Length: 82
Ligand SMILES: [Zn+2]
Image (cartoon, rainbow, N blue to C red):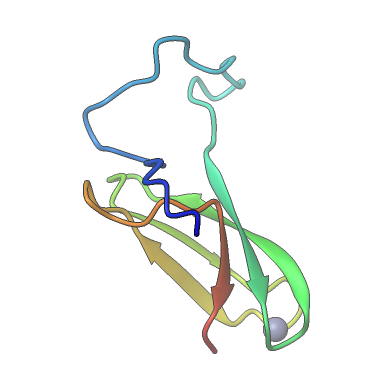
């Protein structure tokens, strides 16, 4: 029913009002992800080249990654397919 294509991240595009910057100079963007292995939420952080979000399960350290593509998915929450 709802399939609104709200884009999350487009390399090269900036939001009009950037988020407040952290001490390191850049706001650390992340996605929330549901780790099915341990039934916990974790976070994936953007890598340096802005091509994907990477992280791991906070309990068992299973790795997870979400690719960033201009035409890609648009959700803010994901499930780790481990
Ligand atoms: Zn786990």
